Length: 264
Image (cartoon, rainbow, N blue to C red; front, side):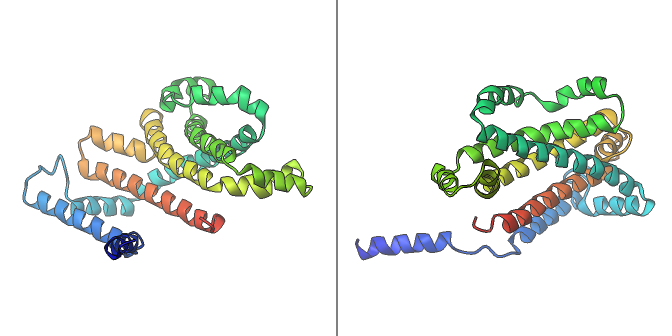
């Protein structure tokens, strides 16, 4: 290989391996907020349409002091926490069963893939009819939205497990339970976490939609209420809270993935 070509390859490898500083994300967000504030201060966009970040923070502080934000946030956290936990747990279990059993794969996988494309929020009126008015329908619609991304990713993870690993475990006398627990589940974890991250965004979307349709408290209900009143500063507080919730969920899942899948 010529020296010039070798140098080009070396430079490309070095570029790919360059570590991004930890403050890069904070820097990007700070620049965006500063530009946003400047645009609002100069009056380029009317405050009714786009309030300044400082005005949003002031409104958020007032809502914290009054306790209004705590009540709405607590209601939303209970709903999304319960719905996400149920949907993710059932999705992982069901995905493992689908991937491990040929019979369940042949019978149930077509059903899963036929229901998955249906917008889950469209089923909320039907779920309310079945389960009544209250918290149960909201938890159910979130769990339903979380279930499908998790079950599909878990199923794909199981199907992509190296068959030689399974054969080796069976050869050494492992039963079905141990094969699932010690071989299939660990090998499927990267795909499972991919499904969990995807489901986190879906759960937030369904939470807001359900609260806008059938709730008196919650972040979604708060956003709709202040939108109707055209109080955009408090509306943007709700949007900011939802953004922080999504970021927090992602960070928690990344931390769990590093702990449970260290080889990745």
